[in-house]
Length: 52
Image (cartoon, rainbow, N blue to C red; front, side):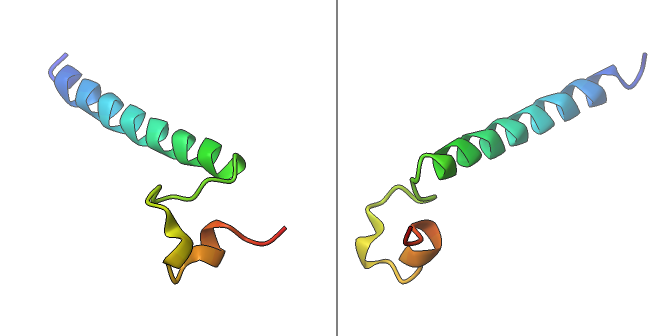
């Protein structure tokens, strides 16, 4: 199988991407923002923390 290394690298890349997306999805469901830097003064505060 000459393409085995390409397939393995692709699986690692897509697995990492999937883990990042899943982590961000969980953080959003918990009400946390995306940057985790204390964004009280951030101009995009309402995008991460909409009023309920």
